[in-house]
Image 1: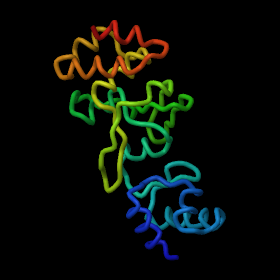
Image 2: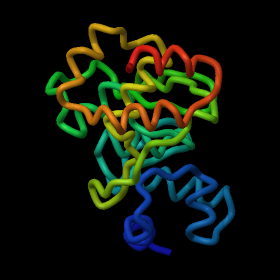
Image 3: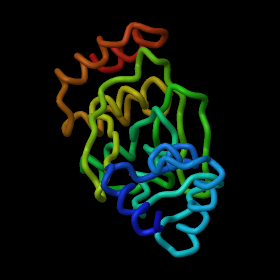
Image 4: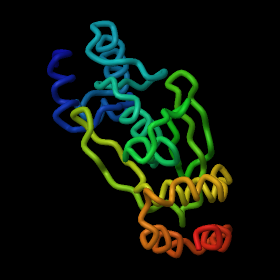
Length: 187
């Protein structure tokens, strides 16, 4: 299989970020052969090395961040920027995940752990010939309240650009630890 065929096959799948195993599954070759292909794709500048053993076929930080760690979705200020609720660009791309919290300084992304019961309220959006998972604006705020990153002052500043009934509906959809705090801040 030629490198251009591999790239075209990967892009046609709508997925942008591939691990060695995912590439192996895509092209039907062993992990060892896929590792060589991965390296050659980067050398020929047909893919970008995101980290050891992972490449991206698009150069979009939002797409890379949400496909690098699965499951995850853009949230907090990154989601609010995506939805044009705020204009200030966050220092790092902020995602939430049900896995442990982590930071990848090399790509400028941080992943905050949230409980599985709070892992909802996001949608898939087409972006850069691929896709990105992004929290609804109201859900991004709820994630921020849960993680103690947003306080009452932040909520007051954002309320004029949010749907209050949707905010309450999403807040009531979570009944885990911290749910009462979220609802009380919104009311």
